[in-house]
Length: 115
Length: 112
Image (cartoon, rainbow over all chains, first blue to last red; front, side):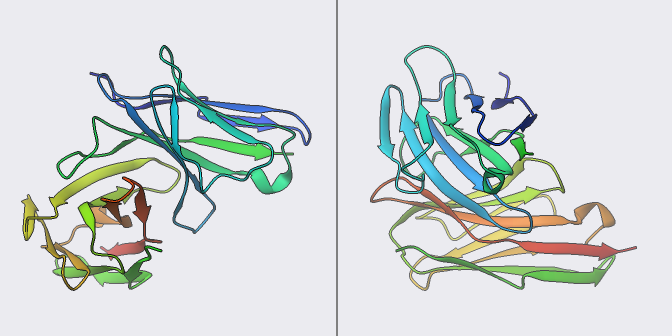
């Protein structure tokens, strides 16, 4: 059972381009979280999804950012018209279900650099 | 709004010492608390998960405790080694919305 897979590991985009970050959860996991980390900072919650549903997107900017977790395939975090301030590490986590005994597992992250 | 605080922000100790990292949270309505380790430029590795009904969990040289009513957790590292140098993050999973909220971490440096 492979862990949480994120790709690409590194992504360079010019200002104004689109960035698409992919996250394949662990097998059997139906819950996905996306986080953003700036240098020397903690992880900031962005969005929480279950299959085909956005449960909570309160941490995601309303403009230019979107996320999906389709029935088939990976979860996608999409950033349109990127700006320099979007440069950060983006991590996703997956867990099996809601509740007290469910552990969250993280991917290695995608490091986005906007030039 | 849940706030997770980790103290200290950074810590340097000589190899071999025992040490304690602290985590506090403002809303005790949680499913569980998890401690993670993050090496520079890398992802997060889960160290220990404590369910809300539990008081502590142990894994090797690591022991994590949870006092849910007072909103506190500690991570105890015994006989520290240079390989323990990393950033340690604690995170709580809220039971009202299932969100996982992180502290800013403690940067630990073990001096050889």
